Length: 47
Image (cartoon, rainbow, N blue to C red; front, side, top):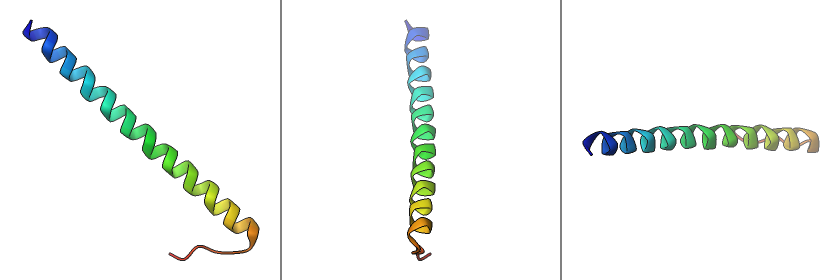
């Protein structure tokens, strides 16, 4: 019983960390797409 609980917690943590990494990557992709649109329109983003 204790092994099953530990396994469930471990798998839950692994899935949570994987999801965070995926969302972070998607954010970078959207940022680069926005920069490409800004460059194409002739405007620049303030940093």
